[in-house]
Length: 135
Image (tube, rainbow, N blue to C red):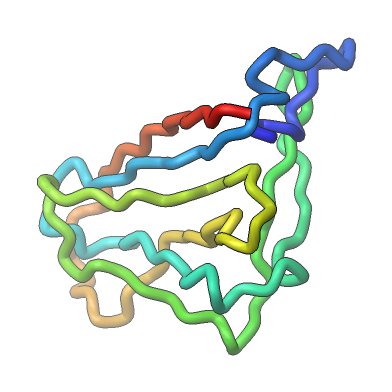
């Protein structure tokens, strides 16, 4: 279920909290080419569910849950070197389907050891989209 882990202090859930769906984030640099702290994504087929570690997200009106990723040498990470402002990455952050397809995508910025010392700091934008499926 989409956003199934979000709940208010009173325990109230919004209607979207029980709808089947997918959360897809759209990420891109504001300026490019991006050389400082690029975004990497991990091949979902290389991440076991046991590699995801639950972590609370505490807001003033609710508590949510996210996952951190435990290191595993089997992970296969990818990134777009020198990504331009007219390029974007779609990240499937959550899928309520439990049919064997990828449900989560591990992703993180990282320090690129090949970047020069005087590169401009990264400026990027990420937009969260919700896709609802028929039940």
